[in-house]
Image: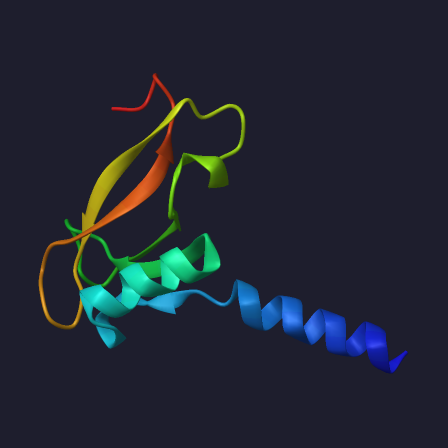
Length: 94
């Protein structure tokens, strides 16, 4: 029982999104590289009060097979308004 609780808690902590405005661009890039992929919460470019969530990856090996490539998405960080990070992308994405 304790192992199941510890596993569930560990999974929840690993899945917790990183807050973009609380980290520098270098910290976000390092976290993505170390984890392989991570969820990042950041403000919408069109409405700063609307949070967005995306899964950022270190490379294309972290993407599901339905995604053919990766693309760069720029998100705001605590030290810059344009931090480049990779997201999985399909040929149909704009």
